[in-house]
Length: 269
Length: 272
Picture 1 (cartoon, each protein chain N blue to C red):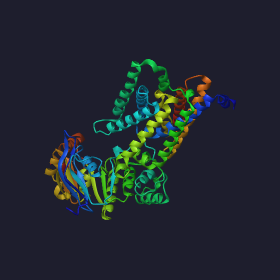
Picture 2: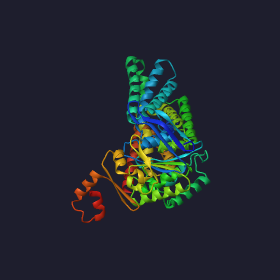
Picture 3: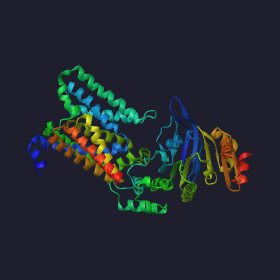
Picture 4: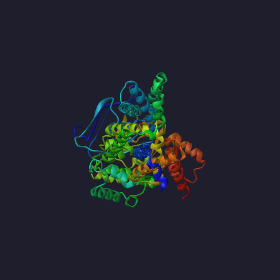
């Protein structure tokens, strides 16, 4: 018991733990749609794109979160528009938009050296530096995402499975795409502080892929992936505390171990 | 023309640089059962998508009678068979317009799905994952998803591809039954032999309509050769029609080496 309780005496750890739990669940939930749409790379790409937006808004003196959020939403919409062209595949669209956007951030950062330190946190995450303000933002985004997923459950499921027939059947597929792009951009933004842009993709993909190994039912996969995302984040935080490794990395490594464990259990079971 | 369920007037589709077809006129009367036949890449799927509103016309217009609802069964190749859904969950998606706003299925939803699965002989497979069904069962599940919305017009893209002969016949019989109940049906296929004896109206299509009419008048070597850009042969034996590409038929015979084990009458027909 002391194993779990000891770190809780530190306020920064409690904040980090709550943030990781929320972000893990949030990424696990959205990851289901991303993995099933076979767009795993979009999490990786968008998190990089958001970095460009964060640098630009910082330079312009805007709120980083608002600027990066808008930038991420814009990038997601642009990707969807490009990907729906008949002469363009989704992976190429993701590659073009997000790397260009990331490059904007890197170019500006290399030109103006003064805030390299701040942005290390954006790149690699610093869950122990999560403030109460950040925690509120993460909680709001997680709650909002949960509401959107519940309210648009049928629309999201149908258009993820078969967008053309969903459209024919009356699902407002364009609106669903935009809405999803918006909550994904917000989720990535909320996760940046905890995981850093380099690790967000893993927390989006791994719980969903692991959950898929365990069920053939979509609704069960949603619940499992959310729970697994939250639990791996918690486990990763404790690993981070006791082994003194970066929290983002320990969360991702624990999720990867869990995936491999379940995969081999399924294979031998 | 004005009482047609669906009318396409001088419709063009494709990209700015290359038209897939141009100035196409087509109408479907209520209760019509038609097959759209032609080679792969000839624009059949494009035409279906245009009717469905999934692709824009570059010119012309598609007009439907008011309140006409369309059901669509896409090609099997377009389905993600690894997606975590059961047969019943797929059919339930088709009730989108009729169901409640809540995320869960209502009692009416479940009853309607169960009744339709029962009618299509799928009741025992309702809880199976879609990848665990046979080709014919999969095709019927997707047909059920379209049917549960009670469409006036049913469009099917290659409904008989990748399933065995018995399943092909079962599917066409089911479509006949639905057509007798008043449903208008348009199916796209490259498989001439299945539709030759099953579908009352055939539209030969390759970047435009080559010919249309009852199978007896349309399925001729001249029209089919023009449709498929290949030398086609048509054999009729009572109610049965057999259609083949002459060069492929010869190649097949050459590969077999001997014809001794095959019914002589048919071989003679193909060869001469």
